[in-house]
Length: 71
Picture 1 (cartoon, one colour):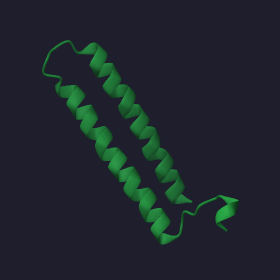
Picture 2: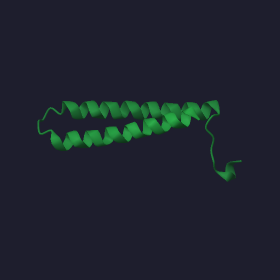
Picture 3: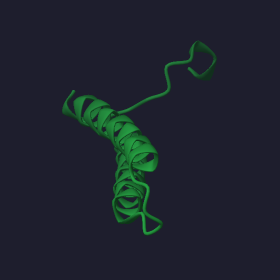
Picture 4: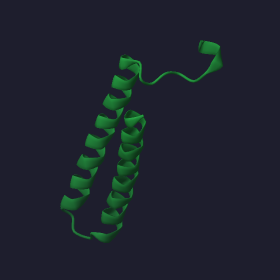
């Protein structure tokens, strides 16, 4: 159960980071875009962590496919 909660928390963090990057894209007018790059780095890191957690869940057997035709 904790794995599903961790996946939902990471997914919410990715969505928040997405909107954070959108805010920096619209708000910052300088050409450097340091905060935008940091938001992109955080989003990519969270996404990689999310995919690794999902893969580990399938590998460990804690997550399973819910489709009836695979059983």
